Image 1 (cartoon, one colour):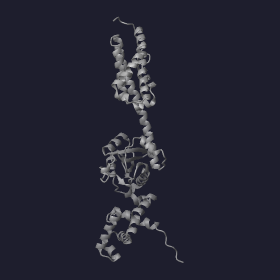
Image 2 (image 1 turned 90 degrees about the horizontal axis):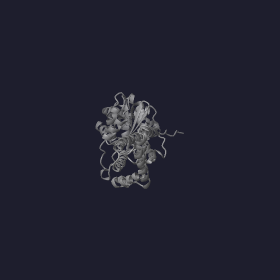
Image 3 (image 1 turned 90 degrees about the vertical axis):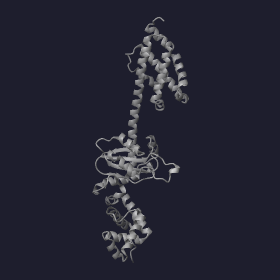
Image 4 (image 1 turned 135 degrees about the horizontal axis):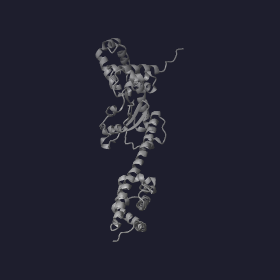
Length: 395
């Protein structure tokens, strides 16, 4: 076949551009299963991208140096929702089909034309990767802002009807109970490392940086099936917090109590923040520390949640269960945790005191014989008695 001039080749390409677009759509339907399952509007948008690719190639072949980024214009015809519904892999498959159709049609034409197709296909592939990279970067920035907004809402307790949808938009995979972990912000916050660590312990996290505080909302990522409802989760929140501990800066680390779901995480966050504010007053505080283990310090600092917890979980249950248990606990703590001194005050045998202390532990879950737990119980008795209504005055 006689060698054609570039002008003749360009004219021939323009004449067959419609034919190439039609052949491309047919091959897409024949070779790409995902294309056939798309709704008509998306199929039409893909067709526009294919047509734009052919038109762009003709313009690029006319003068490859005049518009070095002309390949990026191919995606200008695509609606924004198409970029969200078609993956990068599918886009590259689309480019491959277009290039194959054009190559088949020009197989017997000028060698320079086939070489141009190879160069152009490389450029448009890089352009596609650039489009998706910029989209991913923009989505990452948007997700970071949205995540910060969600964490701020949880910490402030300012809930609205949009909070669940915002959490869902972040791809939250947590199910059931949630805890909030508060610690110091490290010099460099490695968000990706925190998420990787959370995945290793079957958890999902929302991360927020508030000045010198790093806040992590923790949820278990694997829902328990009906047949697993009675079994314990594989990892406790304490274990998850211990796994995340290296991602925090030096200093205290406080884990709030469990709450039923992420929408109610504000209660756990308030307890964790209150505990974090006073944790330095516990000289040998473990890392992480449970917020409920800091109830005395929180109550002394004026935390109403801590006072309510001490009264509701210790003072009232003991008083309602058996007044003797409450009296025994008062006497035991006032006598320096001495069984003999307590027995003498109550006119009972030391074994009776020992038995009542055991019953106290069974009722409220705290053991009065331990130094730290004794402090918690002493504080509960004090705030509980203060909260008691005053007896009516005698007339």
